Image (tube, rainbow, N blue to C red; front, top):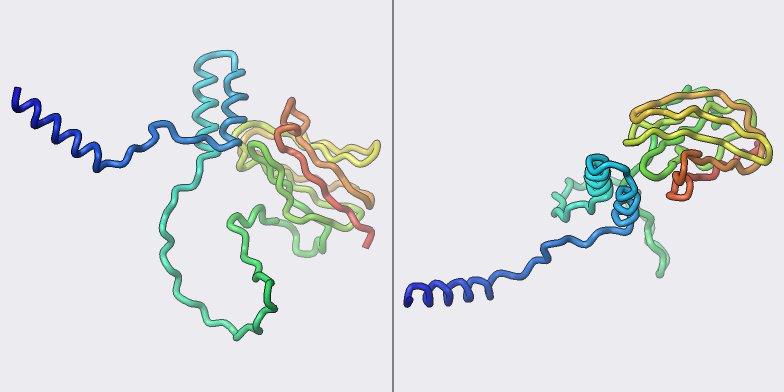
Length: 198
């Protein structure tokens, strides 16, 4: 009996020294939306697979301590005005455009994934424009529609990892880009492309 009492006291002392960790991590809003959609799958196996994809796709980045980079030689900079901040480079550079160097602003890459559309540039010149639809980061099939007024251009549904390109005649104005598959645009797969005349 005395051994149990000593063991119990030791465990209680150890428990007081160990911080309590929440066994269930908090989910991000994207994870919650994705899991809600995963629950609508018909079979248990599909629900389980969709849930794993959601948690893997939208997981929070692990907190790591960055290793300091060696300082790069740079020209001295002018002091900035008080109250202004220096812009920093974005963490995710987004899509890069593997196009013809002679295109001169008449090409754009549209990258798709769950559930977003990213453009390599916000505006292009009116006329014949090379549009590359890149679903290489998508886990699911997606399609692409470009709409302005009554004019619509379409890309067929691309499988995961699929890439295709077309040369389309785009008139000046604002074009709406979206995935026309059910609920994809509502979940964030939409963007705007500005087409300028000069």
